[in-house]
Image: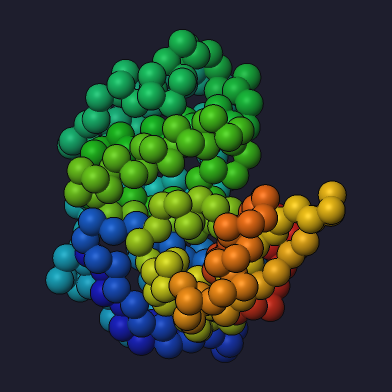
Length: 286
């Protein structure tokens, strides 16, 4: 869908590049995660891809066509959900939706979308009376109003309770299953792990890792197996090398003779990888 080659960008009145020679592709039908600490260049990259920022160096193509050659027809193909929902607070939810529907040639089934995110019963309520979570869900509906081919999501589940976050993640997964493509940024690594086919880590305007979550966890994890078992009323922990574990007599004996409580491989988490790659704790980012 997108091919980004040697992208550089600096804001007016500054000489320092915010984006410093990055290249990547977003494949059709994939969910692509874009991760990094605050100020790393995530939002700037997204704004360039959705044509809010121009005057960049390098090249970007969308479906094989130079992005700079597109006019307003480009927005018929994309949907965007910004981190901070922006609505007309003195209008109802449906008045907001109907306003934005008129901007597009192709319209989705609004009733179905509103019911799916649990807002249909509140459609005639003023958006100013909505909670933050309701505004976020309305934002997602707005991003899908034009049946887009490409969806941009910025911190989509931030502020949602687990139930509504799962509804949103199911919507995104279904969108991809129906052929849609997604670009997502988030600090909630469990969402990224659950949804994304590939992820890129950007630090100081440069991409320093790009792979599937599985491959990254294997790369940064340890090839070990750790088990915990009960012995004399206490929990004992032992770790064994993964290589040759099927013939490790001590390991096999523990499995057969002890009351095993937990058994884990040395696979790391995306949160641990984020901290190692960026040098920034996610607690400082939230």
